[in-house]
Image (cartoon, rainbow, N blue to C red):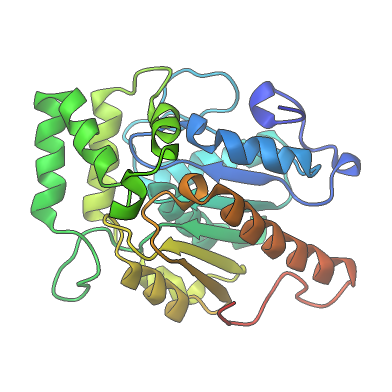
Length: 290
């Protein structure tokens, strides 16, 4: 896996790498394992990579399990992790709930963030009259009740929703399901508190104040975070790019792995090229679809 942070290497030795560290943040019901392929790919490009776990009390590599699990507490611990590793700036890549953590962190600690990449992310998971582009509150509460009654059935139902209909017939799905399995059990408490974040948080007021460049990658057929939420993010974040992947569900970094890696690589190269020119606000980009 090379110089990947999960192996305990010191990522602050910048002379070995082309850019600030990439911090990959997983989503609800998963662990750092979900980003395994991206950790391997981007470490090979000689970039430092951190993949922290935030739902496990113990794990190899960096973790910041806390209770209660709230966005403020999670971003406080991510800030502390950056300080422990002497990181002056980072690129955050967050999937789903991990994307909400990235948004909150970029709002609270803008000077630490070179960029954010929001993968299948929404500013507000639950729909209401003011934001119809989410899922019903009843659906989320049903998942919570299933989790407490029959964990295996709850996760089986949840995993089905990660894929677009077109993706379910692909042989790749079997390999992806293996990545979705956690090597260590996540506590019911952590899972329930994660669902509470999804039910209660509304990050819409923060979006106009996000200063860092943002790349938004979203599947057109996402059944958990409707694609309209990605368009909303793009409209509200001043400096953002939007990439919609056709016939793609909630986990584009796995079902469209090569395409996803290329999109993220091009975004990072663009930011690095501007930085190398020493331009003022060199890590800022224009608001444009690409």
